[in-house]
Length: 309
Image (cartoon, rainbow, N blue to C red; front, side, top):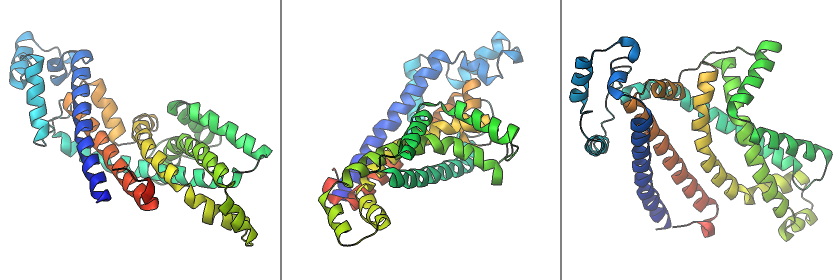
């Protein structure tokens, strides 16, 4: 029953998150996005006449009051209709589906690398006051505070332009290293800090001392006992940081000239392509809801006593 309550609560909260994301995006794009009718016609560069602009407004219902536009907009979304892209003239769902694979591969690779780095670094430095720990902690603080685009530019300059080890742009193979690293390193730094603090406390617990007195080696103690007890906060944090991966993908895909949802979002925002912006926003919000549902279920499975209904 606990798992059922978790799922139902997350699904209910997810509906609220999707509604809020759609509403905020609608308001933001209509307040700050300029004249939507002109954007549909290709922007001011297309030199549309007043008659054509008025015709487009009437066709798309843009001549109606904003509350009426909002009600129709929410009604379409409720039926699963994301509309047609103003810029690309194709269904929004199809355009997103076409670009989603590249972003998913980037996010999954970055998440896996970040998790691996965090576990290894935190496990090796926890419970040890050494110069290596101080150096690692300093590097983590720098990476956590550094904006994604700055880190990406530094890696690009060093590894591509100076050392010529990796290609500047591309879609697969070696070209994936720089964008994955740009996304993974700040996430790994944050997770390593949290995991190390948790391990510091766990390594002082009596059951760890008992394990050592039984003759277990340090690696067995750290990876077989301490790390297992630190998984709950790590899994929870990773779920919350998932939004960072999707948000960072917008900058990373643009910086490294990659195809994907991030680049699609940047182009749609610049062109005031409201249906596309809304569609991608809802996809990101839905992904975040699903990931956090999975995190809740994993947390309940790892530590049933800490599961929340």
